[in-house]
Length: 322
View 1 (tube, rainbow, N blue to C red):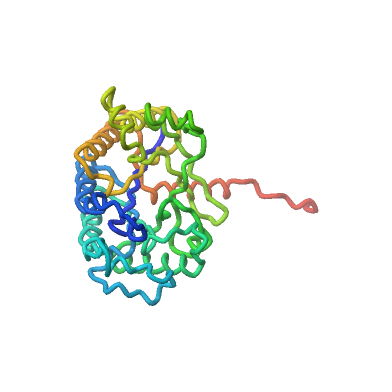
View 2: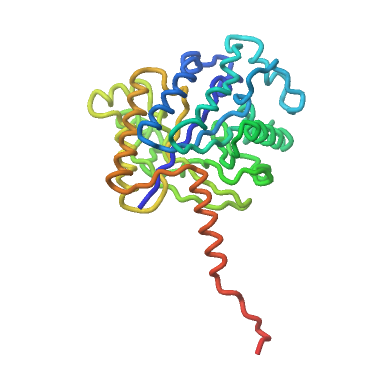
């Protein structure tokens, strides 16, 4: 029997503060999207991993962060430009709502200021500081984060993660699995038919001792004209893909790892999608026995299984023993 994991990249304006032309509709939808997700998860008692940008724990900020070795101007959007609004960069009340929710959520981190760890300009010092400060502000708020999501899924500096309290991260979706569509023909087919059946992934322990829990499906990756056309012909194609993944999880082992941002919930159609996804996940849990876990619990189970395997391995014999 398989498992479903839901992970949420909770970032508000931090997901776009380094963009020349940020999508204002998504930025402005972030707060209500956050609350809508909490309501949907509570309605169906679905625990999720909320990977929160550390700066959102702050109640206020003057835009100065001298202890973080970020590039010049990295924090400028807090003070200048169209995103310069405290509520887009600080949200302690929304973070608190995660802890107050009825569902047993896992609060993880998404760096302190949405730094891409795989970028060439991201030094080890910057990555280390972003982790340390994010963990520190989370602990001050009463959380104990062990889960991590890389901004823009750009994996890097895992050695620095391993030297922190973090024990697991969301890895990238396996290439060519679960209906992956390569090449020009595949892209045309995806535009017409939707994302295809997502893969069930297998959590693994990497060379740093961290648990990699790869993504299966980004719930808002199929948008635009293709989505509208496909939805006229049948149910929302992403909902159909989730259904296919759940059917697979009801039959065999593996993790169906679904993820999204609160700022994906811009239109009523966007809200309908996540409500339908939550309904489906809850139904397959209740009727088919599919588990719903957080990244934290999957990581704990994976590490415990590895420890049990190691302890049960036969010890090598001393060839000189009698």
